[in-house]
Amino acid sequence: MKKLFSLGLLSIVLVLLSGITACSTSAGTYNRSGEKCFKKGDYEAAVLNFSKAVTENPNRSDYIINYGMALAAEGRYEEAVEQFDKVIRNKNILLVRQNNKRALRGKGIACYGMERYKEALECFDAALEINELSSLNMDILYYKGRALIKTESYTEAVQIYSRIIDESGEDAAAYAQRAHALYKAGEYGKSLEDFDMALSLAPGSFSYCFGKYKVYLSMGDEAGAAEVLTQAASIEAGSARERFNLARVHFYQGLYKQAREEFGECLAEGFIESNFYIGESYYMEKDYSTAVFYYDKYIKDGAAGYPEVYNQAACSKMKLGEYEEAIKYLNMGKDIGDKGLSKALRMNEIVAYEYLGQFDKSLEKLEEYIAEYPDDNKAERERDFLLTRQADITSRDDD
Image (cartoon, rainbow, N blue to C red; front, top):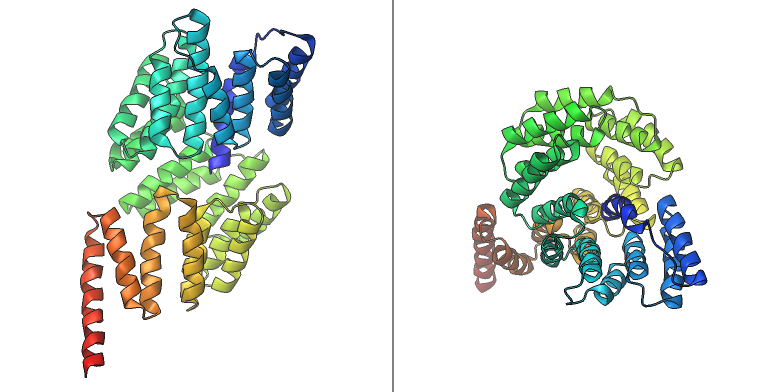
């Protein structure tokens, strides 16, 4: 999810917040307070303190960069970009080049958070062209690789992570990211090899197990997928996050009642995504009304920006024959603008209009879909079907 991704990115930037000296007593005090809050993960307080530091001394680029990073951590990406743009200058001076690299990196992260991946890549490339602060290069390359995957540039992403592995040695995260890029490119065998390498370096990673599990599912290898889940189920779950992931393992194993009990405990620990999986467990048991209840709870509790929940709620509504309600969920999901799920949301909308008998509307939506996804052969066959249905209705009306 986007928020989790932001936290993961920003934990690395703490190196940028060290070694800062105060220009004035109050500005320096606010900046140091911001650093402490940032390190604790209290980004709201960090934003407040860095804002005061910048107000006291608006000429310190390091204060402005810190402020921008804290804003990005809060998900306030547009405001973060405004701060980074204040720093970036076209001057060939050592300090300016260093500040430019930090600001371009920060702006790239903010653009990534806003799903402006092309702009993020431009920022990362510009930052990498600056020779100073070369210690940031590996970090920037990680983000560039993620952005390339988002733009479906899988071959380039594989090359980026291969470079990281070649230059930094055995790195579990780099192997896992390359495995993901290979999976997206349809190179399942190579993807499994990289996930195996990642797991050999980090055998207690639920995330890598889930990645490997997904590859086996895509290959249609149910036995391989089951074996991965068995491996994941043996991981010791000490932290709250690990307990949540273990509940996910039990859900994927089809142990729905056990998983619901575990997700219930995870809810008490603040993992609101548990509501989504509880809903999914009821969906798998064909209790669609209860599934919708938990999907709605997930949306209400803070997952309004998570498009998959809208798709699943819509599918439940269609199972219940409530097609107009399904379309409402689908439209809410489409409004989020997630490219990865847009295809499924739009196709389900077409199906919902078909069930309502609104073939003209369904055909209209299908034409828009084909314009966006011209290589989808199933959509072409669906159009032929709808044109036939439309002709049959016109023929009956003429009679």
